[in-house]
Length: 137
Length: 311
Image (cartoon, rainbow over all chains, first blue to last red; front, side, top):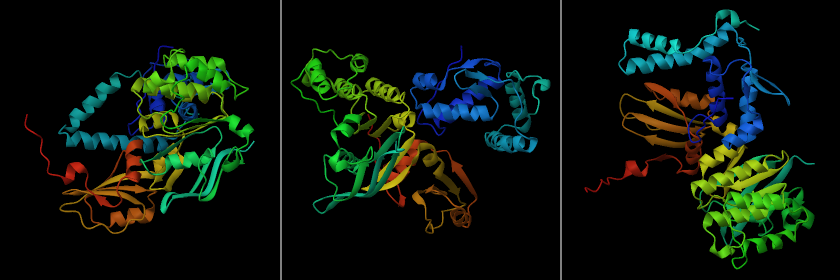
């Protein structure tokens, strides 16, 4: 497993959230492919020197989101991509981020076109899986 | 087996006329890593000493592993590990003498654990305790306690004065204890980054009174900081029930609030602000909001007119 986590205490993002964000990002960008194995709760807790409950909580959330599959004793793996949220729920989740990008971008003096362009460049760096791979559950 | 390993009810202690611990109700679940936070002199050590039976409560009760802390049986004591503040050791004894001494009280002594912890802190077994560095003393007192394989580990500010490497080793030792799912750690600390790593529960003691006792996650989610911006000087602030701290600047108020509820949002909403924005908070920000000065304050940096000395 080539993937390694980095966590920093003392930031507004709680440690379990940092773990979730890193796995989620690695999964959507293709750094972690479906079937890739993650360390066990205990192993990751000891590697990061954090409470195992924190890792268990992060894995639990990732499993609920359909990003990982975990079976007791068999290991934790990146799941095949699937969409577990409804369309309105997905909109509800993305909207605050779009708003933050727009507000921050305009207040920094970017034009709308420049913002769209920079979003497009960012998206181009991500291997978005083909739509056929994203079946609703 | 009970699910609560430490329980205090109305625990109170006076020293002369001064109240050091005021009606504290604590409940520490089995298997948790429970951090007790508070400023110096807030009563943390007094609570820990009462738990260990080293100090009588003035009022109220304390139990560990189901037994009254004033009369812990030898069997219960054998299941409890205690790392005292400042890592006191018998200074003239050598490391291996201290091991044989401690071992003689504990039938379940784990020599491999003792050696492993010693090794992590790079402790020579022939050295006299009195000649060790602060980090090594911490390592030795930790080794002497962990080798008894305590079901309940109580530590009074174990990180005090440790360098970053020794502190990390201490954290690793704590994570090691959690390999036994039923083992519990109750410790006091000022190092909030470390607390954030290892603790799943926190209690906050402020001037002898317990203000918070919950999971770390619940605690973080319940403290919010809002920036309320105005066109001119902010208006005087009406009473807000959960207000922990407010800072006033030219065009804004920064309010830190515990358990914000709709009525509080309404009060703030009625101030005629241009905007209200929630600021992300670190664990340390949230703890400081509880422990800092109540009400409207200015920081040292805002309140003084000190200027930098020209070099």
